[in-house]
Length: 213
Picture 1 (tube, one colour):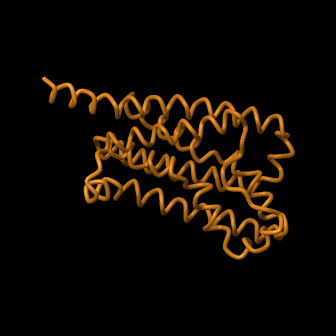
Picture 2 (cartoon, rainbow, N blue to C red; picture 1 turned 135 degrees about the vertical axis):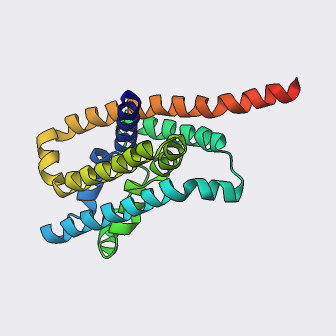
Picture 3 (cartoon, rainbow, N blue to C red; picture 1 turned 180 degrees about the vertical axis):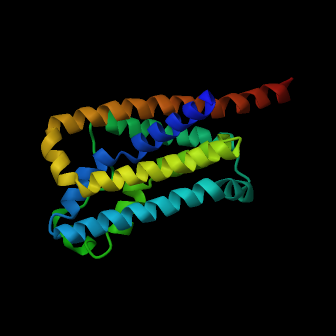
C-alpha cells in the first residue's frame, strides 16, 4: 500500500511540476487577453482535453513506440533527465517558457491556440510526454498503472481549473508569489531529472562493464 501511495505522489508531483500550470497561466492570460470570458474558458477546456488525450496515448502506447523504433527505455530516461534538468533550470530562474508570442501575433492564434501552442507544447511538452512513458514502464501492476492514469487526469483537471481562474489567481499571488512558486517547482523538477538520468545511466554502464569483462 505504501508503495502505491509513494508512486501516486511521485506521479502527481512530477506531472504537476513538468506541466507547470502556474507557469503556463501568465502566457495563457496574454494569449487570450482579447477574448471574452466564455471564449477564454473554451480555450482552457479544449487545451486541457487535447493535452490529456496526448498524455494518456503516450502513457499507454509509448512502450510500443519505443519497441517499434528499437529505443531503450534507459536511453529515454537519460534524455528525459536532460530535458527535465533544462526545464528545471528555466523554472528556477523564473523564466516562463520557450514559446514566445508577439503581441502582433496574438490575434492570429485565437482561432486555434487551444491546440497549438497551448496544448502542445505549453501543457503537454516533451518533459510530460517522456514522464508518462517512463513512469508507465515502471508501473509493474494494474493498480500502479491505474494510479498513474488517475494522476495524469487529476493534474490536467487542476491545470484546467488554474487556467479557468487565471485572472483571479495572478491577482492573489502577484508577480513575486508566482516567481517563488515557479522556482520551487523548478527545484523539484531538477531533483527528478537527476533521479531519471542516473537510473537510466546505471544499467547502461553496467552492461558496458560486463562486455569489457
